[in-house]
Amino acid sequence: MTHKIAICDDDSITSAYIKTLVEGWAADHGIPVSIRIFPSAEAFLFHYADHKEYDILLLDIEMGEINGIELAKNIRKDNESAQIIFITGYSDFIAEGYEVSALHYLLKPVSSEKLRQVLDKAVRNLAHKKKALFIPVDSEMIRIILDDIQYVEAFDHRIEIVTADNTFLLKLPLHEMEHKLNEDFIRIHRSCIVNLHYIRRITRTDIVLDSGKTLPVSRRMYASVNRAIMKYCTGGMES
Image (tube, rainbow, N blue to C red; front, top):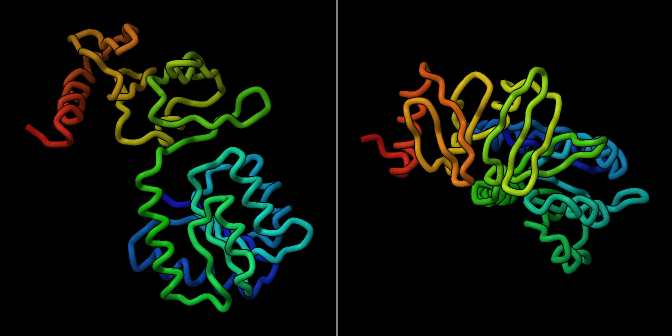
């Protein structure tokens, strides 16, 4: 999993320095990261409107018209899992961080050792958070918890994402959607991917979900699907 990291600071020298520290930490731990620098809260929010997948945010507090605290409050409106780390030259703002569940405050100049400790904690927290993805639906971005998706089915050039409460229809190739999912999902034939958690039983030709929904299993894929179900049910232990 690649962690998407945003650094938001109106001081370009500080931003570049922090980016170097983060890259060093990621290289030492073998953690794939994608890092982007934003010179203001406004610049980040403009980008974030269409790219909500950032999971670690390093935010300066003292910025232009929108400061780091206000930016964090905006982010928290639709993202509870992002790890927010404030960077500041003053300790006066620490109390406000509780309102947005900030992970930590780092005082300038930022210590490499301290930053590494905080990033370690951020990654641990993310590992325990429910992963979500954002999909475009009717000119807005909708957040869906991965665990809530029961199956994804392709029709022509569209896919249906089915949860217990909703069905979302969007234009996206199934193979692109497959890359957004995790190891709990298995392709059961060329046009359908299923969440292993919701499979009640499997036959040579079909699987039945907890909801009662029946989906066909490809003859070619039956063996691999069956193995995946057995492995999932035994907690990842191969028999």
